[in-house]
Image 1 (tube, rainbow, N blue to C red):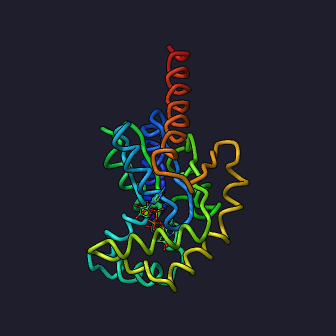
Image 2: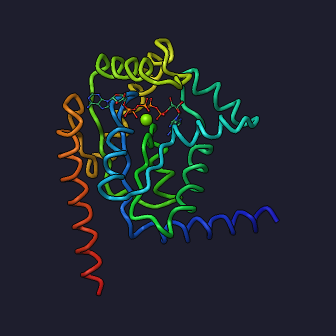
Length: 220
Ligand code: AP5
Ligand code: MG
């Protein structure tokens, strides 16, 4: 029975992978506060893509008040990483819900470990592009502190101690991701004005869309 259930799950995952394969999947990488969410909002506005932030999906689970949510909250408050099974399962479900109507997926805050990328591509679909927003620690801390000061609803992890732990987690894992996915990663200087950064983002996404159109035409 267990084997049967596992087979069914694999078949479903494969079906999802195929369904998701012909629309762009873009990973959005970068440290805490570098501007991932800000750029994703602009991409959604221009391209109508589906924005899936791993952090937002986890915070929704926490807000539900479930036992699982309480466990997730503890990990997030420590600045560490939640288990990939949890994150990938939330992403997989969200992709499956949106795939019929989606024009493309922005996977914001994922992968945060090399293995997360490997599992995503094996279980869901290959990513077409990874955008890495490079930013100094000082700038990231300043941006998070400014966001926390301006926001009426402060995030639990936007305090100095947790920010330092989030930065450490980021530093420990990011080089390995960048090395593995170098061929499909564009590093963007995120120290600039939001709109200047976005110009580079647009060029990269237009290039992906053009390649997909050419591939589709070649198959006709
Ligand atoms: P997550 O929610 O993803 O947090 P984060 O990565 O720490 O990043 P933030 O959301 O704080 O910042 P951002 O880069 O989106 O910046 P924003 O655009 O808001 O993850 C939270 C936690 O969940 C993790 O610590 C972990 O525990 C867990 N988690 C998440 N994903 C996981 C995974 N894959 N595996 C395991 N665990 C996971 O910008 C910040 C501020 O700066 C804003 O006020 C904005 O207006 C401003 N700003 C943005 N760009 C600019 C600019 N160019 N110039 C000036 N200001 C700017
Ligand atoms: Mg964010």
